[in-house]
Length: 557
Image (tube, rainbow, N blue to C red; front, top):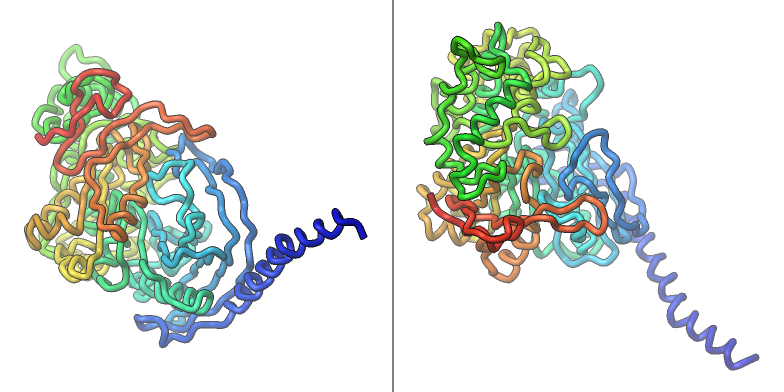
């Protein structure tokens, strides 16, 4: 037997054989996770959890996302690389046999870092969140939490969307509504912890929640309702003042019946008027309204009014009322949860933006590509689709209710009940903060899915309740001018999850950060950058290269 042959076998024995031995235990450990979880392990009234499948998934490289719309911000444009992990899919049974189960997916990496990340949902949920993606606004070329060794997981929130079924229909069932409001996320969190204990022999050292929009609401809900369950929360553009938001969206839709609809050409006229009044308030005419507070004082919708000799871009008196309704407060007429009795107006900038596919600017969210109808049409606004459905299924609990005649005073008692479930506006985060919990919030100022001022007002309420110093040690709010709901329209990309983990685990509190405009395909080049300022500051141009962050300073109005 030759010396080279012996050496080759030694290499095989010391390198290849251990790899084979490691793969087998990982496969076995994954397969053993198929055992069900009793209801007693779940911290809210619930049925037990069953595991439909537990399979070892091999590592895979980064790929481009294949979605039917675009352009996409970088964090949505890619399917991140994954390591070897155990994919566990299952369901939590309801207490009410008429309620749907809560579906979940838990991803347990073979090489675990000892912590976990729960991913939030969006809209009215009803789709299983896999936990395989990137956190909101993250750079496309940064590793996902799973690739960094975190256990990741998500849920459908306790119902599944189905063809030809209104997306809000599940709310007719009390348990399904409670699951969507808050219970599903707590229940899935508890199931995920059991699975981690079974797989690794211990509970996670740190637990994080990341999400935006509905997922941002869920994250703040966890801090408010279950302050001992999570250590760090990333909450973007959260739909927290939920009942008032649906009320405001419904009213904006109602105002566009009977000649009030603002078509895309007139939306463009509004946008141009906003830029003419406000673009230079931040020191630079670049199509981005950064001085959002200054614009509120400067813009005058009356300048768009039709007068003798006006061109077709002018707005009628009825249409101007819609514009003013978008920018003004929408009163409820009663006090909802935590004393809130209205919804704030929207901001300025990006009105005519195409945004992320069909969901950017006014056309995507507030006015639609066609006038509103009942039932809502496929090209109408999402504010009307979401709001009118919430009125029918959450408030009136009558699919035949005429949302064009919506009067909050007639449904006030029920709306208060829904507010107690859905609104994540409790300013008392003292328990969460005292045990060391950290929250990073961000608001995109060109967001027309929800008003960024709802989050700003919540932040102020927390400061008023707990004191500025206490809040500064546990909660940071950032603003991104010119950025839409999904994260497009201006430099937006930033690794907020990394900032959160550094704050939680190393006590490195985040200060001003930098957002970049990143290309969505390799090599993911950066073409522009802006400072991401803490509220209430905004990026003000100081001179120099307009594509460099150092050419701007965070100014306070």
